[in-house]
Image: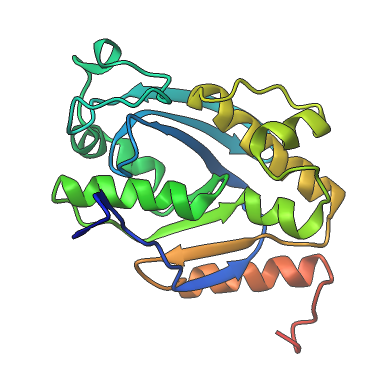
Length: 219
């Protein structure tokens, strides 16, 4: 990975997609210590199942460098005794991602940061499957702004910005509301590092038939 203009870049380009609303997913939000995409210093997860929140977790992360920008809501003192991202990943954080659907706002950026953090620690990224709530907001709504804070304000969802444990929950709540607002519209599930499996494609086809979006013959 080579730096560009002083900063490392790791573009994340989806290789495949399907369409369906997952019954189980985990919404994710993160904060960086500085402008480097690998400098994750706080990450929050909220697990949803059948439209209900099931659990929430967050982790303070020690970034590779003790360099914190003025924009970061986290200080070195808060993370100097925390584990590094690679240690969290190997200890079980990977279970949030492998064979599970991730939901994030500006998901290509979020997943790009996670991909880059893994590369920094010499870990090969797995196949990711994710839904982007920013994509849904732009395509199906007419918000004054598509920033998460504005979306939550207009939809009456409580959020504390720059606080991943707080942000991850409304991200999941937004996609559940979107499903109610547009019951026959299925979000794109993007895949990167590998293609959708036959099981993924079959699940997408079944969802379309059950919602009468398409006939089995058309699919």
